[in-house]
Length: 121
Image 1 (cartoon, rainbow, N blue to C red):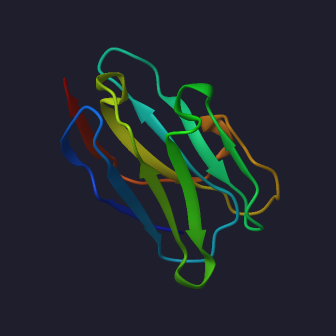
Image 2: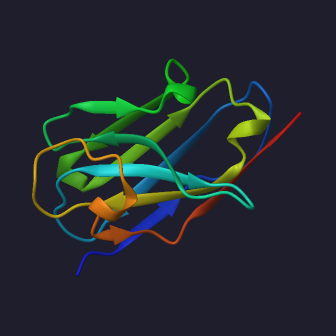
């Protein structure tokens, strides 16, 4: 069993930045970030494999950066140039095993509790 603990959410004005962190209690392989806005389905944001391969959803390319520290079992999401449309609960996810950059929620084994990100206009 792997536990994921997220931190770093909050309220920021449009154009501002936030950095999310997700610490895992054990070794993980691919890790990802998803988000869910009120009344909407959970959507993929970014993913990173153990070796550092990354995929981003189109709406965040050039603004968000996913990274990881394998020694600390931690993944980060640096969010710059934030927009009101980025407002959502952000969830960290981890997959045990495999080496691909997974983008679908059902492909992940463990989830964090979520952290709220609110971007005001």
